[in-house]
Image (cartoon, rainbow, N blue to C red; front, side):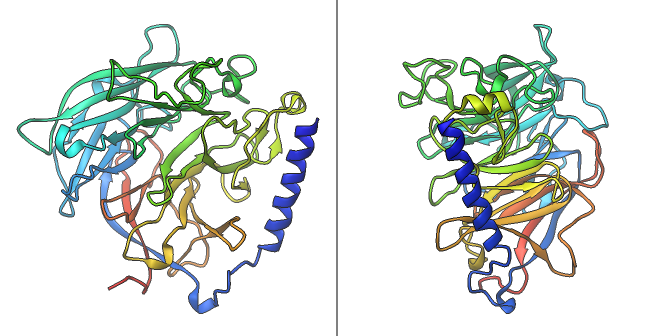
Length: 411
């Protein structure tokens, strides 16, 4: 009960600060208001879900299509042949809404020299589950830098009881460790396991995990992972997640941001820290969800912000801007909602994260006709938005936009 009181007090403080900051401008005038614009960089993609760069000096942009291909945008042109095509490894893909497919990919920090990259995808289950989440390693072709060897090596498999809440993207930290965000396995209210997968430390679902893909086979566990030598899976870095849809590191501070999709009422942004419990299914955002688990208490880590479903339906985690072209965006976390909206967070003088709607040039509201699937960055730190005009895992209506500020580009 003591923990519940502390959480309620923290929530009251959050509400008070939010109310005070409704008109927050941080001493900005209307003239200084950020006005965003979108520049289309490519289109005609099949359900694009992720965008990455290889940090190899080539300035290429790689875009993963949900149904199994990774395409290359090179010198402003989308190459006809895919960098990688693993559709034959995936569960059957249909032209409808699906939570499976290629869910994320990441290039090894030393990709320029070793040519290694990693893909998280949904494969048919061999054990009677709905599907199996697979982390596999691939390598670039020895003869063509724009093509990869399609023969990969499986690093990790996680059985998925249902087709939704698979999580997906994968990121490396500056030490070279690989992080993967897994959802809770699907179902209403974390329906699998006791007391649900999010709070079950013997299960990788509902977690952010951290592994070392450079030592041992198929991987090793970093010695400073929080559950090494304790109860729980050694791979776990943090837990209590529902559906982490896009995690990313701030290149300057090293903080790990996560957009965690809510259940019925609230969407949230978390900063993920070692060993912390982010509350699901006891909590949704700042609020109790499972009253029994909530009453039992726990050292729950609170989000840095939330928003109700009247503002959106499914959060899409983004990136802290660290590019050079738009100095006014420095340090701001740009993210979105699948139902058409784009937001940003910035810290005020009290280090509170304040949420703003992104105001776009020529638009009276923060709402688009397309679905927002993901965000990504190029080698210069500029942010891109991955979208889809029509729902469908094999629908060729995907468009990638570059996010810019109107009339404020640094010369």
